[in-house]
Length: 330
Image (spheres, rainbow, N blue to C red):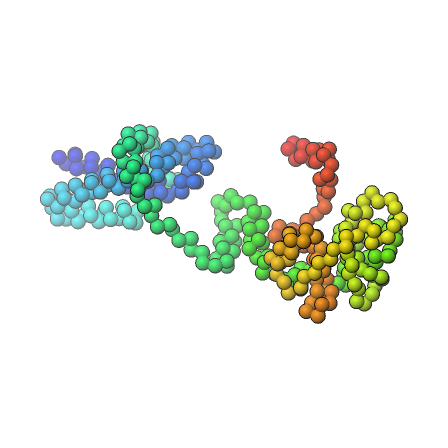
C-alpha cells in the first residue's frame, strides 16, 4: 500500500509540474520556437496545442489524486495529512517550473505519451473543454500612453530582446510625434527658398534651386524678396527635370496652395497632407502671417526618427528598380 501511495504522490507531482511548465511559456512563443525547429518546443507544443482540453485533464486528475492522498493521509495520521496539504498548496500556488530548465526536459520526454492520452480522451472531454471559460485575461499593467513608452524603453534594454531597434524607434516615435506642433519642426520663413512666379526657368534658376537643398518651393506673386509675399502656387523640383524650355515659373508651378497654423499638431498636419494630396503646407500664425513651411517628409521623419535621404529616386525606371533589388538580394 505504501508503494501505491508513493506512486500516487509521484503522479500528482508530475502533473502539477507539467501544468506549471506548459504555462510558463505562451502558446504563441512555443509555436514560434517549434517553427524554428526547436525540438523541445516542438514536443511541448504537441501537448500545449490541445489548450483547454489539456487544462481540464490536469485539473480532473490532480483534484482526484489530491483528494485521495489527503483522505488517505488523514486516516493514517494528522501530521501526514497536514504535511501533504501544505506541500500541495505550495506546489499549486508558489512553486514555479520553467520550460527552459530541467522541468521542460522532463515534460518534453513525456510529451508523446501525454499527446497520445489527450488524443484518446478528446472525443469525450473535448466538448466539455470547449465550454470552459478562457479565464480572466492578465492585466497588461498599462494604463496610459506613458506606460507604453516606458515599456518600449525597457524592451530596448532587455537582454533577450529580439525586436529590431529600428522597429522600437518607429513605435516610440509614432506614439509621440502627435505631441509635437507644426511650429516645432517647420522650416522657418527666413530659411525658405521662395520663387517668383515671373522668374524665367533657366540654368541659373535651376542650379540655384538644386543648391538650396529643398525639393518644394512656394511660388509668390511678384518678387520673392517681398516683405509680405503672396503665395500663389508651389513648384516641385522634379517638375524641372528634363525641362528644356525657357518659360516662366508659373507655367510649371501647381496653382494649389494650402495653409496650416503653427500651433496645429503633427497629427493634424499628416491628415492635411493626406486630404490635400499636397506635399507642402504654408505655415501661418494667428495673424495670418507666413512663418514657415512644412513638408510631408518633415512629418514622416518624425515617425522614422531619421532623415529621409534621396539615395534612390528612380522608382519610375523598371531597369533601375530591378538592378537595386538584385543588389539587395545578393
